[in-house]
Amino acid sequence: MIKKHFPLKLVVLLFLLFSVDTTFSQDDILPSILIPSKLKENANAVVRNASIEITIDDFDKMIVKKKEVVTVLNKLGNVDAIIEEAYDEDTKITDLSATIYDAFGKEIKRYKERHFEDVSAVDGGTLYSDSRVKYVNYTPISYPYTLVFESEYKTSTTGFIPLWLPVNGYFVAVENSTYKINNPNKIPWRFKKTNFKGFPIETKESETEITYSIKNQPAYKYENSTVHYREILPKAVITLNKFALKGVTGEYKNWKEFGLWMNTKLLNGRDVLNPSTIAKVKSLVQGVENPIEKAKIVYKFMQDKTRYISVQVGIGGWEPIAANEVDKVGYGDCKGLTNYTKALLKAVGVTAYYTVVYADEKRDIDKDFSSMQGNHVILNIPNDGNDIWLECTSQTIPFGFLGDFTDDRNVLVVTPEGGVIKRTSVYKDEKNLQTTVGKIKLKKDGSLNATLKRVSKGLQYDDKSGYEGYTDEELYKSYKTNDWSYNNNLEIESAKLTNNKTDVIFTEEIETSIKNYATINDTEYIFRVNVFGRNSYVPKRYRKRKLPLKIYRGYKDEDTFTITIPEGYNLQSLPPEKVITSKFGNYKVNISKIDDSSFSYHRTISIKEGVYPKEDYELYRSFRRSIAKYENVRIVITPK
Image (cartoon, rainbow, N blue to C red):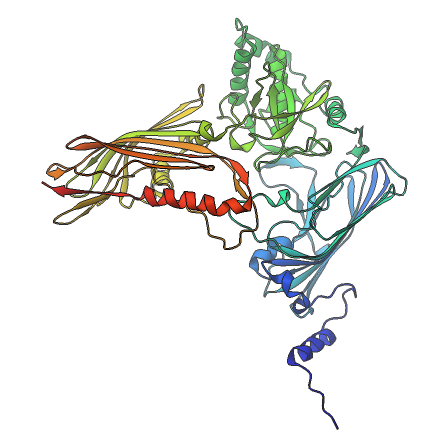
């Protein structure tokens, strides 16, 4: 008799297959051991099986059915296992369930719809909202675990058709993902595919059906200083030419038509103000002829009178509160405050346009594909080709300044003639300037006293202007733990802040001291010459870089210091001039003797914003490494 010996791994695998809970769908193979090893590499979670099926019965009737089976491999993967579904007055959830399985595919917990929490879909900073969400906050007891989440809803709002983003970020792999949209009545639609090339995607497209699927897509590992995942991962967006939004119908094929719909259906008639308010703002600008000067006065009036609070009502959260209501209560969200400011400017004869933008993350409105886009609203004032942009939710931001919240991106400007794509203000490279001028006095005991004046412009103004709201204790702590954390024993003696909102310049005048800064022995007094501008950033090393290099923000720092050495010491040789030049920016340090007891230190560093091929990453790293090395240069002085 011949005995067969089965490998141990095969025995374990057979045991798992026959012992797992059999209540799940036969299409879903749940044990985590069965995930292909290549999908676990660089993954915090693996999407085992995801499907979205959408049925468009009419321009105002849509059914969305979703299912996601995701295995979470570690704590960081929990963000890919969200259990929630949103709804509102015209969206009804018809099916909702979730089940958690352990690593072997055995059921741990089952949630039916009655077990879901039902809360407002927005945070406590929102005044009121008609959007709600049903969710489960599951706390894992071990890893890996698998979530099977299913939902279905019916809605009369078709303005927002769920998109397909099969790989939803870095560190997540996809075993199988399918997106299907049925259009049996041939409602006219448009769709756009992005970054499909190079991915194992199967497509099927017709007048009545679109299907996309992807299988066995490994995870992308995030690399420092690279592009947002949206720029490289596949995405499909679909929109109807005729749609409904909270009972309001619309029809468009391009941005001009979309903007015309917004102006007619969402904005028209909502800029009415009380006669007393009109009289008030007219009196404020009396005698002022220049429209921009009028706008400055009105903008300050708005900032002084109102405050921001989120309000997610109206037509799908897109319609602003009426201007006279904001005027009455003194608050509003971005839509309400922008519409209110627009109405105030109209009252004094200044033309301004409501503008839709993606805020925070630097992201463009897609100029080539019109659809419901954006998450914020600002105001546009045409100015002979030099447009002025107003952020209406801040009580402190200067007139015409956006900062990095909404700068340098395509936006939709809504005019009575229709929508226009424009680009907001660009704060490029050396416009983001910080200059520091100061005096440093070294003492015999190795300590130092210093006075410095730091002036910031552009996005560096944006970084510093928030200091104005700090208490002295908070400000001094920020200097010690953020700005100059590399200096042990740093103390701030005083700080004077000046915020010039007219010229958008922030000035800091600081007196400070550092104990035990220098290293002293019988023959030498050694100190780092760069006291208040050290930039030691060196990018992480990658043996095989896979993603492009992206420098998100360019800037320029320029420092000029006069440094006095202690009495009784000789100032002998000084380091030669250092110049480093590259495609990514420039670096220059010049140290020169003034007299026997003092010398000057002048340093500039400029970094250029841009996207570069992955092959340039090591060059960039070398550039920053060379800078970091010289930022720590020491000078030695000796006793007389």
